[in-house]
Length: 552
Image (spheres, rainbow, N blue to C red):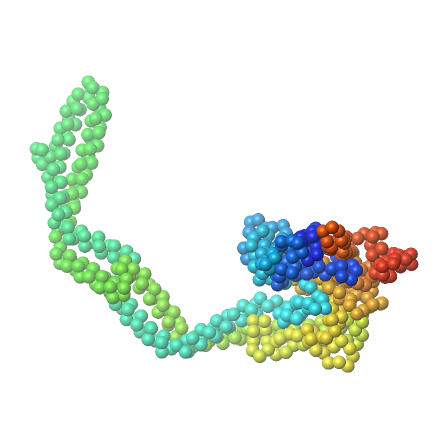
């Protein structure tokens, strides 16, 4: 996951810039005031930094910044969770865009979809880490400091965080139960009474509909019986019944079917009708045999339906809603029974606490083992950066209370000179020291953090000679694992870069603007020579520049 491409339009003093970037170590150089940090400023804005109208180039209506990164699986999961990508069609890259107009209004997009500044900042923590004299960024954030130590120690907080959540939920459930026992008991008693009332109905989902069907049948029993008798008489009357008439019609046509073939089809139809009519007559006979008036059963149904409607009115529901309400009360009663079981809740809370503490102790042991190793490694890296005798310390302090991250706070302390007391990294006074410490930490932990692109803004400030060459070699080493970009004024550092960009100003009829140009071969030699000897480039400085670029 590294920065592949940047496009700037009307940004500060850049009219238009279209720049491809490569892996490895890239140096950005240029004369004082040329705007060497302009790419860094643009990257900070496209990754959610606060913006205002001052970044819009004079004479333009808005500034536009685009940055494209390649994708890692972890970043794709984040894009999917935030709604910027689908699992079926994973994007090939991460494209960020931000515009700022003359009113200071800002708009942002992630892969073409509107995004918030908060989302941009979340991405920034994943793809880019900027170190500079005045922008310490991740190494002053407690969670990032802890994350570096945990990565160095091989610690994952996934299980610990889950156990913390379980313990917290169990603790909250116990606290709620203890503080609400009287209220819970009152609610439970009320539910038990309500359930007993509605239980009289045996309130299944189909009960009310079945009750209505039975009541309708009994209340219309006489009319139903009369209708059945009338139908029987119409079908089975000795002389004029439908069965006798159908039989006669069938016989009449059957006698002449040999003469008229068409009669045969009609005979078949009459035979089918006669059979169906006979079935109906048989069914009516059976129906009348089992059906009788039941005034007592009707009265019982009236009383039961009255109870349904009375309870429905009492609980402000329709009769059809009573079964669902009954099940809702049963569920709530089960929950109250569980909540009022303090003994069970105390056991659950104790078990959750013990599980968390056991895992937290393992994390603490791993941190305690890794902290001195990380301290020693960074201290060694500091010695070659002009901080001889300096000391780095990873401090573990017991937290006031357990958290999802463990039982201790992690802090980076540094002593820039022998005999001084280590102090928090963010409070180191010297910007040059701060930058070099950043480089020492970055090199030592280059295989760890999630950000694949590291940017150093004049981390070589205040150093020179052999230290400057060490800085360059360290950045070159760091570039083997990560994409590294460094704004530098030291030729020793620039000469170690795998790629070289120069930032320069030029003036024309439209005014002054900055441009960024990749350097190679002779152009790069001249830039290194300029950095060595100032504006006047001599044969000696050119020869020295070639020698520096040829060093392994």
